[in-house]
Amino acid sequence: MMTTRDRILNEALTLFAENGYDGTSVEEIAEKVGIKAPSLYNHFKGKEDILNALIDMAEARYEEFFGSDKHFGKLPESKEEFIQTSIQKISFTMNDPMIRKMRKFLVREQFRNERFAEITTKHQLNGIQGMYTKIIEGMMNEGLFKKDDPELLATEVTAPVALWIAKADRQPQCGQESMEKIERHIRHFCDVYMNE
Image 1 (spheres, one colour):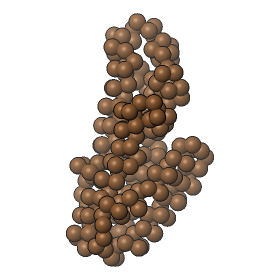
Image 2 (cartoon, rainbow, N blue to C red; image 1 turned 90 degrees about the vertical axis):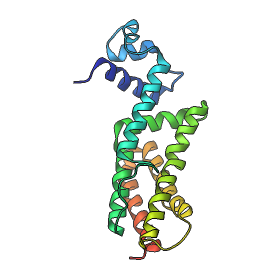
Image 3 (cartoon, helix red, strand yellow; image 1 turned 90 degrees about the horizontal axis):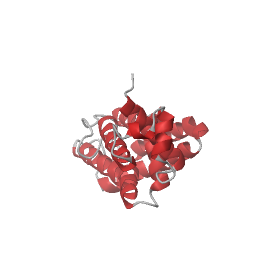
């Protein structure tokens, strides 16, 4: 069962994703939760405190289920393992309700707030590219990938994925199509750059 604090966070994220940070009031959040606004202050100092808690939760969730350049699990030992691991990470990103709402919120707010711009860049470019640079470099050292520039290869494999995820976010009915294209892309990438 969700606690009142969890319900506040859940409803706030939904409202932030739909209306933006400035377009959402503490009163609206409280109303969605079914409490009075003063009761919300028993759990959070205010809207910014709610936002900070949401960002911390999303970052921790993303780190746990997707990974980062510091935490990506064991190196894949084959082409198929690289493909399946990548598809699992992407599927999490595309389908996790919290991550989807947070991405929608950040994409919307990135032009209004430097902090949101930095978080968006981290998750759509720098973070994923850094993680895949380390994975590909490690797999190159194991002889699985052809010797090349791992950072460029990481960009080559991740950039189209970000575009298809963005399409699925804008047009949810294209989610399955996007996943199929992502898998085709990753398989093609492996055919071109892997030694197997």
